[in-house]
Image (cartoon, rainbow, N blue to C red; front, side, top):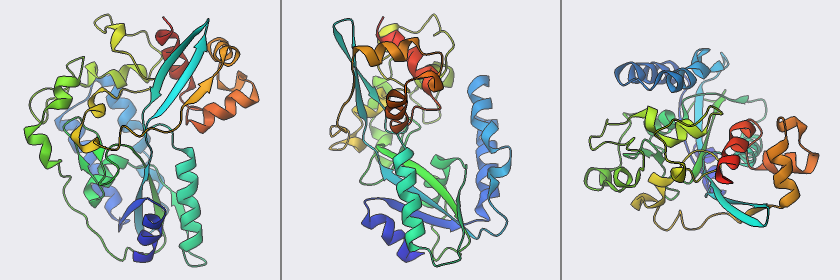
Length: 297
């Protein structure tokens, strides 16, 4: 497994391995944390539901590998009625190509006959407890050399872990004396204490849905195609990383109008559908289209 970790690092990624038996401990840790500090009911259900099936790790699995791939924010620009609307897709959404590349690396470097499968786990918690990254005050995971500009994926493997760095989830040391993310959050979702987080006021929680925005939310706070990046943009842990985004993705007048009028992702023309899928928006098309309408006023 040490050579596998090296293979990921040679491709610009970071990886850690832990024993597959950590799956139960990881999920229990997640559920206990949500019991101690519940999220708002809607977000609580959405957070817990994917893991009710105990992650689907196959019985012969002996290890888990969690991989962080660099994923800068993606500027996405739309032409509409003579205007150009500039928006941003945060790092955590555009991920399909990263997952495919991680799968290729595993196929190339695992011995013949060994099995691996992508698994659905609480990825931020797994990354934190494996030592791959640390939590920021804003509840975002930061990975050395990548900051929060990364996408996480996890796989179960039939090989045992050669090394394991399992431990408690640690915060970024600098967060204790910073507070920039708290000051930057327009809705007041982040409080002054480490555990002061009001999920019902988090902008990400509201623009990942298609429900009407709450009355207290200022439309001017809304700036991303999905999620929110206010607390990440000025974070010292992202210095020198956040300001190097990917090349912009542009949609012309006709394509923008098609997105606005589409009844769903499958109703889009093939080329538009493919470009949105490359951005990781196939499953999140409905909220992204709703948010685009809001950005257009």
